[in-house]
Length: 156
Image (cartoon, rainbow, N blue to C red; front, side):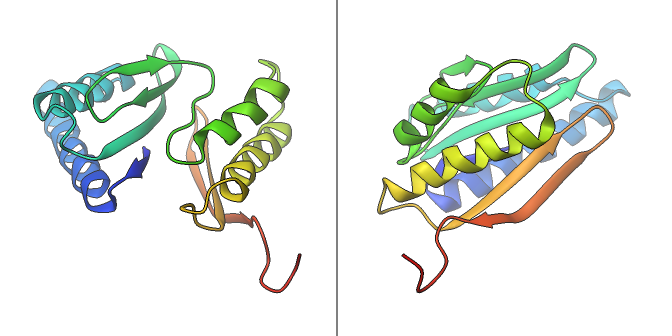
């Protein structure tokens, strides 16, 4: 899960849902599905009617295959092949809409995500400068932090 919005809200929301998913796994005896995490997140955010400033991207792999959701602060969700959230999302979405293909290799997909995040950073004053990537496969989750820097100091 990654997010945009108020840092404290995104952190507490993801911690709470992570705990609830762990309790769910203990009570059912099996790993929770990605759709379960999505449902928990959207129900919690809907309950607060947008007063929790957490816009989240939820991705994962379960017995039903790969999933990618965008979850808005008021609780609505989208399930799409690619999603963007936050203040740089329009520029990032433009890159995805231009270059996304369903048959991308992993290296091509990483480069596409890198370019989309960089576009969001360059076209928004509120975004940072580090580009982090998370690769989710059936076998593992690989966090690449930092994957790249959008702009090196002193370089134009």
